[in-house]
Picture 1 (cartoon, one colour):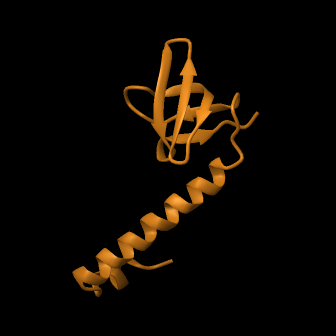
Picture 2 (cartoon, helix red, strand yellow):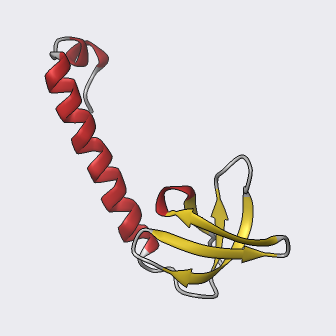
Length: 85
């Protein structure tokens, strides 16, 4: 774990590179975690306008089409988390 004092010693360019690496790592881990989700599975959406529990209708590489009793939404991988059944 990097301490805050160590981060303060880095330059802006080094911090930007670190930010890019962290974001890429987060996205990769999300793709791996969501790789087990299939059509028909229940997922949670973390969004203020479309939050709640949905059922997966269609899978694309970076977006999922989800459906609940109120309708369908297209959602990116970063907003979806699997529900343990």
